[in-house]
Each structure stands twice: as C-alpha cells, then as structure tokens.
Length: 229
Image (tube, rainbow, N blue to C red):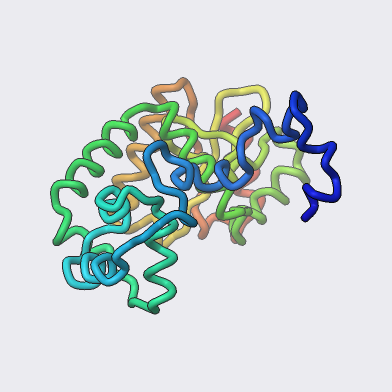
C-alpha cells in the first residue's frame, strides 16, 4: 500500500535506496543468502523427512541444509517449531566421523599459524571480559605503589605465540606471571607453564614468576621485582 500512495518511489530510472548494499541480516548469518539456496518464503519442504534425518539419523543441520538446498537457519526453525530435542556433539561425532575428522585437521592446521592463534586467544579473552583475579589485584597495587613500571595485560592486552602474560614492563622485555599455588602445581599446568615461558624466551622476554604464597610478604615481592629490572 505504501508504494501505491507514494508512486514517486517506484518511478522508472530511480535508484533503489538499498542498491548495492548488503542486507543487514546477511552480516549476522551469511548462510541465509548463499547462492543456490531457495528463499524461505518459496519453500515446499518435507518437514517430516528433515525431522527424521535430524532425530533418527542424527545428521548435523549443515548436512541437512545441503541435501535440501536451504539455509541452516531454515532447518533450525523447523527443529525448534517441532520442539525436537537438540542433538549432542557426541551424536554428531558418531554419525559424521569423516566431517569431524576433517574439521579437527583444519583447526589444527590453523592453530599452528601464530597470527591466527594470537587473534583467537585475544577474541576469546575479550569475550570472557577477563579481569585481574585476587592475586593479580594485589600485584597491581604493589606495582602502582612502588612505581615498578609494569602494566596489567592479562585481559588480552598482549598475546605472544598464543599465550597471554599477566604483566609486561613498559620499556623492558620483562614479563611477570602470577601463579596460584594449587592450580599451577598440577602436572598439566606445569607443562603448559614451561611451554609459555619458552615462547616468551623465544621472543626475547625474561619471565619472573610470583607465587600466591609470596604475596603474604609484599616487601619480598617488591625486592624480587626490582632485582629483575
């Protein structure tokens, strides 16, 4: 009706207001507008077959959307409408072993790319809105009160070979790692800390480790940091 009351908008030769612009929904979910996909309002789908493939054969929605040449969102809409219980990741792994194997291989190859790894770690930390924990806050106060020249970067402010240090010196290549007594004494974490320190060393950084138990004596921590400068 709007077009009938405002015919000037549809005159021959006029440029549409959205010509050349990307649809806002496409930015959020590009799959909706994949080439070859049938628009959702022109579909004539066998919904029973879609539900059977999803609930009985445990096919992933991505596989089903390729079979029917529709968007991933369309499949999810049908599943949600019929209130079908969501399949677990384990179900997909059992019924789609080749796809998961291929995906795992791709992700491993990507992870070896340091630029990709640094970008991913930074985005994960940003998404978690990670801030300093209790021990790190104590160290922040010690650094500020004694003008020791370190800044907190444990929120993703600095990523080195996929690792995020807790503190880094403003002018010198020195890193401070604040370790919890229990967590960082576990065998798994000991190995990870060794890899982390080796990565820092490879990039020219010296690492100073401050343990949680040492924070009971702030003067000792101050002396330890000053001796590393």
